[in-house]
Structures are given as C-alpha cells and as structure tokens.
Amino acid sequence: MLDGLDRGILQELNIDARRSHREVAHRLGVSPTTVIARVQRMEREGVIHGYVPLLDDEALGFDLTATIGIRISKGRLREVEERLARDPRAYAIYDVTGDFDALLIGRFRDRRDLDRFVKHALQDPHIERTNTQVVLNRVKEERRVPVPPKASERASGNP
Image (cartoon, rainbow, N blue to C red; front, top):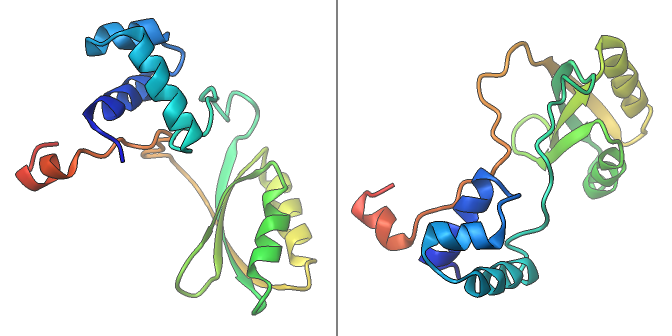
C-alpha cells in the first residue's frame, strides 16, 4: 500500500524520471536515503516497472496511429494477442467487451505500413475480423499513469 510519501515520490518521478534522488528528497523535505529506500521498495513490489524516455513517434517517422478492433476465434485470444504483441508497431493491446475481443493501438509509418500490418494479421487463421480506425488528431495522449490520491483525500473531495 502506498502512503503519502510514496505518492509524492511517484508524482515527482512522473514529472521528470531523470531527477536525482537528492533532488526528489529536497522537493519533498526528506533525506535522499529515504527516497532511495522507497524507490527500491516500489521497484521490488512492481509499482515502478522501469524508466523510459517519452519519445515523439512522429519525429521518429510513425505518422499514423490506428485502433484496430479484432475478433478472435474462441479459445485463441491469449495466443493471438501474444503473437500480435511481438510486432513493435503494436503500442497497446487490450481485451475488451463488445463486438470485438481485443483492441490494438498501433503506430505506423504510413497507410501502406498499416495496410501491410492488417493484411498480415488477417492471414492468422484465428483472426476472424478486424475493424480499423485511423486517428485523425490527438486531443490527449498521456503516457504517464496518474498517481491516485489516498482514500481519505478521495472521500473529502480533495484532488
């Protein structure tokens, strides 16, 4: 369970994961040793999985984002999702409710790249159908996970 200090550390790292433990400690008014111990514990417990730079996909040549609903043969969901997940263009894959079994969000270089991806996916005998939607504009895309408030803060209406 996370306490207020853990949440503060996570908020600071969410702003800039390159901040030193010393700087985080200074901002929170605790010792660097405390921050180091807390971060190491959260890494061990799987709260923090790693540290990655936030890259600009368009600057790297991925000019097209698409969502692809996928209907998968009964009993083959995990197998197909794992196969699709190996493709580096697959940004996220979710099990979903509704008309499709999975939702894939992918980044592609252009329409031809997307076309090749979908046609290759449809060669899988366990993929019954897809529904592709091309993203026209990004209104919001936040890659950081928000740090939830403590239960007492939620009950009082504080953010």
